[in-house]
Every structure is written in structure tokens, then in C-alpha cells.
Image (cartoon, rainbow, N blue to C red; front, side, top):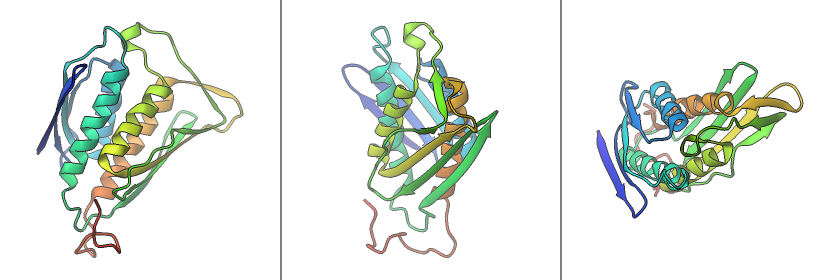
Length: 206
């Protein structure tokens, strides 16, 4: 179990992570949908994750809290991976939900990269909620961008539906994404018994 904390003028966040856990999660960000998505990520990735936002500026909007949660979790994953000896490094997984399919491919390369969720035949319909609880694909992109930069992981996310111009609510779009994210990271961070050293011809991932 590793611990990671971050404190700024806008937020204070505490995170405990066991990357070789059993999927137990306790998430308290103050953003309802993000809490649910991170619980799915931890459960399906078999990560034990306790993450709590101790201070936030949610009275203004959710931007800083959402972004900083991505930063703190990304840093925690990088710490948990250590020198990355023997890990699989690459992970890919697909998860369906109703008529939506999320495909995630990632590489623990040390070069964090994320270009945004790529959608095919899908239009996200955002249902209005209280301002402090509102979540959107834009916020999800900010979360993954922050996570990718801090963890050093290259992440590609594709979300597809079979019919042209299909409307999908934000919950249905993001749920398979976070499930697949957990499964793909679990795969990439797992130990390859054939690999004794660092999985890079450079001999280092930093």
C-alpha cells in the first residue's frame, strides 16, 4: 500500500493505493459520478483504492478537483509501479454496456500521453445536474490527461456505438471506459514470468 498526498490553494487530496489488491474502494471526491467511475476502475482492476478530497473549491466548479484527482491518482500509480521490473507493460481491453463499446489500449512507457476520448457514431447528451455535481466528457478528458502525464502512461480510448448519430448519456458512455481502464491497467501492471528485467530495450522506463 502506497500513500500519495497533494495540497494546493484549491484542493487537498489523500490517496492510498495497493495495485495488487482485491478491488476494495472508498472514494470521496465530492463529485458523484467521478466517485462511481473510480469505484468501477478499482473493482475491475483489482486495485485497493482509498481516495479522499479533504478540501476543494467545488462551490466554484469541479475543474480543479477533477483535474487534481487525476494528478494524485496518476502519481500514486507511478509510485506503486516502482522500477517496473518484470511488468507486462502493455494492456488492452474492451468492455460493452448496452449498445456502447469502450476499447482501451495503454503502454506504461514513461511517456504520458492522452489525446482525448475518440468517439465513433456517438453524441453524448449531458443531463443537467446541480452545478457542483455536473460532469461531462470534457471533464473526463481532463481527468485522463492529468493521470497520463503524472503516471507516464500512454492511453488511447475509443468509444463506439453501431448506429450513426446515436445519443448516449454520459453515465453510459463513461462506465465501460472506466471498467476497461481498470482491466487494461491491471493487465499492463501484472508480472510477466518470462520477463526478469525492465520491459524496454533502453533498460529504463522513467
